Amino acid sequence: MKAIRVHTPGGIEALSYEDIPDPSPAPNEVLVRTEAAGVNYIDTYQRTGRYPVEPPFTLGMEGAGVVVEVGSEVTALEAGDRVAHGTEIGSYAELQAVAADRLVRVPEALDTRTAAAVMLQGCTAHYLTTSSFPLRAGHTALVHAGAGGAGRLIIQMAKKAGAEVITTVGTPAKAEVAAAVGADHVINYTEEDFLPKVRELTDGTGVDVVYDGVGQATFDRGLDCLKPRGYMVLFGAASGPVPPMDPQVLNQKGSLFLARPSLGHHLITSEEFAWRTSSVLGWVADGSLELKIHGEYALADAAQAHTDLEGRATTGKLLLIP
Ligand code: NDP
Figure: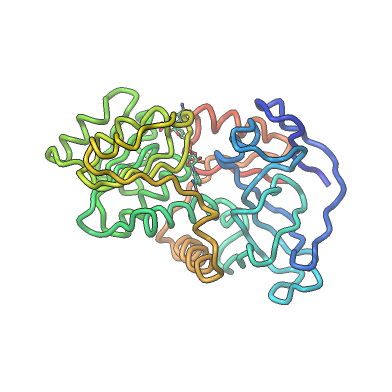
C-alpha cells in the first residue's frame, strides 16, 4: 500500500510517499481502508520531532473509511462497516489497523470524509468546552485562532453552551469566517493588541477562560486577559511552545488555573469515548455543528497540506485522500 512515512524527523522533506506492506489486524484490531485522513497540527509536531515518535512511522492521527477485515476477537464490527477515529497513529495510508474500541461507526447521514474531518478537532473542542472548563451561560471565553480547524468548532460549542465568545484571528477574511460561526467579538491580532481590546469588551473584568492553541505568541498576554481565578487552557503551540514558567506568576496574576490538556486523556473510558464521539458526529449530522473543509489533497501531496497549515494559509479542515 501507499503511505506517508517519516524516517528522520524534520521539515516537509521528512514526508516520504512510499510503498509498504499491507498491515494485518491483531486480534483486537480492525483493518480499515482509509477514505480520508485528517491533517492536524499534531502531525507537524510528530514530523519535526517536537512530539517524539519512534521512526520509521506512518503519520496521521485521524481517519475514516470502510472495514475490510476484523481481528479474531472483534465482534462489534464487520467488513463493510463505515468507521472513524481520531487518536490512532497511521492514517496517512491506504490501509490502517486500528484497535476496535477506538473506532466509532459513521452515522448513515454522514459521508466518511465529513467524519474524518471532525473526529479529532471536534472531540477536542468538546472536551475543552465540557471538561477542561465547562462553559455555561454567563461565562465569557477568549478563543485564539478562531477561524482555524479547532477554533471554529470551539466557538460553535461555546455558543451552544450559552457563553459569550471573543476570538482572535490573523486576517480580515478569517474574521469573517469566525463571525459566521457565531463569535460575538472578533479581534484581528495582527493589527490590534488583543489584551486592551479584551479588557474593553469585558468592562475591565476579564474573561473566565482562555482557550489557547497558539501558544508562545499569545500565552503571556492571555494570562492578563483573565478574571481572578480564571482558567488558562493551553492546548497547543501553533506559534511555538510556551517556555517554562514560574507557578508564582499564576498567584500574582489572580490565583489563576493553568491546564495543558490533550485529547487522549479525555477519551479514556468507553462511556466517555461514546459520549464525545456520538455528540460530535450527531451535531454534524443534524446540522447544528458546521464544518468547513479548507481543502482536499491527494495523499502524495501531504507536504503541501503541511506547508499550508503551518503557513497560516488555511481556515477549517485539511484532508488527505488516498
Ligand atoms: P489551525 O487550523 O487552527 O491552524 C493554526 C492557526 O494558528 C493558524 O491558522 C493561525 O491562525 C494560528 N497561528 C498563530 N500564530 C501562528 C504561527 N506563528 N504559525 C502558525 N499558525 C499560527 O490548526 P488546528 O485546528 O489543527 O490546531 C490548532 C491548535 O490546536 C494547534 O496548536 C494544535 O496543536 C492544537 N490541538 C490540540 C489538541 C489537544 O488535545 N491538545 C487537539 C487538536 C488540536 P491565525 O492566522 O488566525 O492566527
